[in-house]
Image (tube, rainbow, N blue to C red):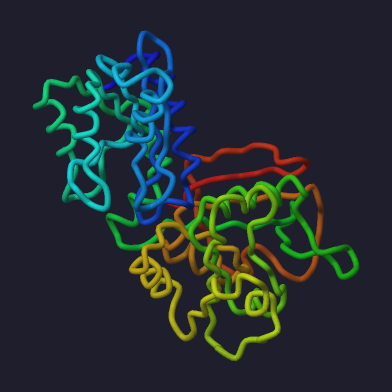
Length: 340
């Protein structure tokens, strides 16, 4: 059951709000909500952290604080995800919706949790509340993708990120500088890092690049630094590198002597729902070849040639991408796709 163009317009506002919670709510989903009365937004909110109030409760409170306790009676709430119907760390949102007197619920995604799917909608309908589902579903599902992967497989959603020259090199000749991608693209990487629970690199990348893997500036405000995972077959790593010596060293974990799949499964059991893979070409190829990367973000710099490293340094390998999005990121071409 889908809604009107107006429903889609308000749902997209809720989706934009929901994205503010990515990286903050794990193992819970990121959710946004907007309350509309007589065509006007009277309340809005998003799930801000695990254990805290859900998006619906924030939106209801916002409406009551701004317009009074009776303002939500007969109103419509737009929610990116089916409201929860069970008492966990917080009371069920279906009860909050009924108590607020909301007359209509418009939802984007259905709860992917097999134990809860559809039960929230059923309770609301039994209470006489109109329920519309599947509005802006594709966009709502995109917001939900981290949680959906984790709740259905036990593993986190993996975004593989890399930057290359137009000829496929991931390094520049000696003396030409460190960065292939532009400052705009590196800022975009900060945005992605903020959305993810953990950043994973291989031992070779750790040894050669000595990365920091931190959020900086405005991207670090209001949230803990992502976990930093080093996957290596050789645990004798340089102890003077940044990940072991900076102020966030307690956020660094070494996964030694296990496979990428085992590493991801371990992180999943620890409540990690999203991982940004910032590895070299061999680990990237392994992730793609074995179906362990769910999403690829590639920054192509306007450079011909490069150094000795390539995006995929192995032969007889090919992975196709679907649902391609191509945009400019400063002077770079930003390509996002999903491996098939």
